[in-house]
Each structure stands twice: as C-alpha cells, then as structure tokens.
Image 1 (cartoon, rainbow, N blue to C red):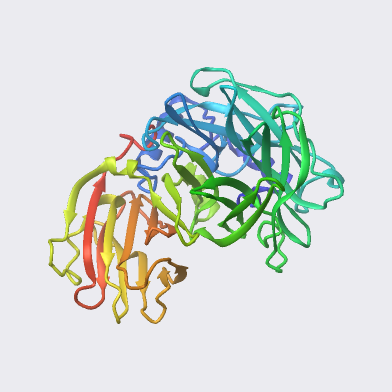
Image 2: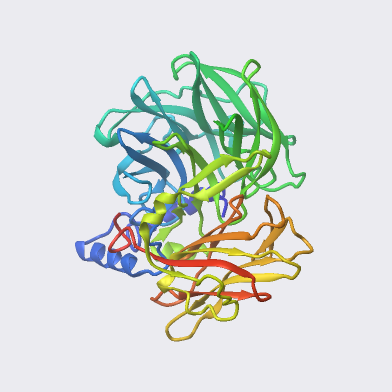
Amino acid sequence: MNRRELLKSAAGLAGAAAMSRRGWAGEVETYAELIALEGRLARDPRRPQFHLLPKRNWMNDPNGPVYWDGRYHMFFQYNPQAAVWGDMHWGHAMSEDMVHWEHLPVALAPTPGGPDAAGCFSGSAVIDQGVVTVMYTGVVKAPESEATIRDGANSLRESQCLATATGMNLTAWKKVPQAVIPAPPPGIKVAGFRDPSPWKSGDWWYVAVGSGVLGKGGRVLLYRSKDLRNWEYLHFVASGPGSGKQTANPVGDGEMWECPDLFPLDGKHVLIYSSMGQVHWQTGVLDEAAMKFHPEKAGVLDYGAYYAAKTQTDKHGRRIVWGWIPERRPEAEYSAAGWACMMSLPRVLRLRPDGDLSIEVDEAVHQLRLDEQRLAPGQDANMNLNRFLISRATGELSGRFARGGKPFAVQLMGRLASGELNEPLVKIAYDPARPGEVLADGKAIPIAGPHTQALEIHIYVDGSVAEVMLQGTAAYTKRFYYAGDVAPDVWVKVDGPEGTVRDLRVWQLEPISPDRLTS
C-alpha cells in the first residue's frame, strides 16, 4: 500500500478511531489488557529482532534523521492510536550506533487550529546555529479549490512548517505557529506539495519540496531563505516526465515526486525521490550559480518493499540512507497483529567512478554477529548446504558465487521445526545469457561491474523481512509471512554447477531487545 493511499474516506477514518480504544490501539481499557497486548506483541515471530520499529501500532517514513551531541536521532511517521495509517505524529528513537535504539516520547503531534491540525507529515532536520530544527509538512482539511491532496474522498492542504528542539535528547519542541511556506507557488497546478528537505550553502538556506504538475510529471520545487522562516520561491531544481499511465494517485503514475533529497556525494550531487512505488536516484551536477540539477545517470535504490528514503551524514561524514519497509499482507492482518512496518537497516551510499551508486548495509550491524559458519577453503558444497542454518529467521548470509557459462540460483529456504514449511523465502538467480542482471524472485535487477567478477550476495533476515544487497550496487527488500507462533529456520540452497560457491559465511544475529518491544 502506498503511504498516500492511507487517505481513506472520512467515515473510514472515523470508524478506525472509534475502534481504536479496544484491541491493538494505543489506548486500552485496563492494565491487564495492556499486559496481554504487550505479551502478544513480544511473542509475534514476524516482528523483527534487529530492525527499528515502535513498540506497537503503525509507522512509515523516516523523518529528520540527525546525528546530534554524540547520538543518532530517528524520527518517523507514527500513528499512536492503531496499527493502520492515520493521525500522523512524529515518533522518536535515539541510538549511539544506529543499531541499538531507545524509544523516546513522541516529538511532534498535530496542533488543533494549527497548520498541522490534520497531521504532521514527513520532513527533515538541520542544525541552525547550534539548534536542531525540523522542517515538515503540515496538513489541514480544506476546500477542493485550495487542496494539494485531492482523491475524491479527501481534500487536504499541505504547507511547510518549522519546529525547534528545546529539551535534552531532543524531547521538547517549539513550533513556529504559522506555516513558513503556506502554499505552493501561484500559477502551478501542483500534484502534491510536501516532504521538505533543506540544506545550507554559503549564507543561504535552500529547501527542496516534493511536487509535480498534473499532466506533465514530477517536479522538485526550490526555495531559499536567510533564516529558515521567510522563504522565496526560485524554480524547479529537478523535473521529469510521468509514466503516461493515469492512476487515481499522481504518485502512482510519476506525476508527483515524494520525499526528495538532494545532497553532495564524492564530488557530484545525488537526487533521490519516491514515486511509482519505488525510490529513484539520479547522480549528476548541481549548477550552484543557476541552482539547477543536471542528472547524468539514474537508477532505482531498492527493487522491493522499500519506500520514502531519507539520508543523513553520520559521525564520520558518510552518507547514510534509511527507508520505510512497508507491509505486504492485508490490512486486516497487520491491524489485528497490533504493529505494522519497520525501518530499514542503515545503508551507506557512495559514488562509483562510473557514476552509479554503491550501497551496502553499515558495518555497525556486524556487531550483532554470533556463531559464524563458513565454507572451508576449496570445499564445494553446492548440494549440501542445509547445515548452514539461520535459526528462527534472525541472521545474516554473505557469499560470492562464480559467474561462469551456466545458470545458478541461490535460495533461502524456510522450514519450521514441524516440517510444515519448506519453501523458498528469497531466490536470487543468474543466467549468463543476461550477464548485466540477476533475477530476485523473478524480478530483473541490473547490477554494475564487470561480468567476470563473482556475484556478491549479502542478505539480512529478520522475522518477516530480508534485505538483500547485490554486488554492492543494487538492493532488494522482501517481506515474507507464515502461520504459527514460531519463525522458520532458514537454510541455504544453491542450484548450479560444481564450483559455483566461491565463499559462503552465515551468522546468527543477536537481538537488540529481549522481548521485541523495547530497544
């Protein structure tokens, strides 16, 4: 489900709110109900053991990740009332290493009568004169003539808002009472107006805002300011055509680019944005005199269940990207489960000499490794890998596989102790007739680099998700589900000629929480 398809009818949202006092809501009737709720969540094997998510209820986009005062802060779209989209707040968690997290109180909540009365949507964090400041999209109900989101059932106006941190660990916030960018530029029939991403260059602050022009395609609007409060519209800093396919939601056909992020990387600039169900990237040159971005190469950041990506710099100055991992099961199932969605693992972005992006999970995650299993040098185990086991779907695999003249496939197989499940959770296949790509569960994914190099596959498996890194240049995130109260054990299967497996290592990964609820 696209994050904007959460815009249900008013009656539907009212019904969800009415039901939220019972079951898996933020509110419960008794202490006994709370204990029962947390017990069920703690026993749910589909909840991840080393990914960030709130204790309960719904989360989506990463918002304003920032390194501040020796700690990493992650904000995210959060519904405190239920495990479905709605009532958007900013959840908040803090970490010293981007792996182990401490949940903190909600950072931003809608203000009745304010420019965010109907929800605090996505945004970014910057440090202005030593103060952490967030710029985000607020929404209010509005007549259709004034709306920037209109889907036949909802009519919402978006504006860009500002808040500053005033407490220790960024736990207290002061909002600027009025929107700092109250409306889109006049004369443009926008297909959305949200997700501000500011940065500073010289004496000026600039902000990229996700948008689009109906019937023409996605756009990134550019503004500038001296103080983050008074903004001047400049022009489109980047743009592109839509898909030509008409959908009910302009994000679905490329006429709206969400979550733009424009940043320098290794001597070039990178633009990422979310549209048509995927996170897209472009590398190229930002003409800082004209403030226009000129793309040179383009691609997709992740070919699976991954959306609304947002970047930050870490304490070493590296560019880290986070993404929202949505559900891929019916809403009724995750609503009943009491939790929905998670944050991706931190991924490091670098620019390759050929202009492509390289992407890999940050090595900080490796501190969780336990019980390494490794293929002995020279040992060919193509047909005998079931001893390479990841217990209860909580572990990591790293392997190199020879790309010769014959096809091969690497599969992660799931098996319950009862033997009820024995099927592929993830399948990566290579065909030498198509050397520039691999098939991930049948989906073609381009991979960079010489075709003579061994194929590198790195997979992190966690409860009901697998994050797959391919050759360090492509990613594929997979959600998988199963019945029962026990997660499957995962083993490795390779179908291919002798000598396919060059190197193979498997680890259990230590949970970051004793009960899946706290971290």
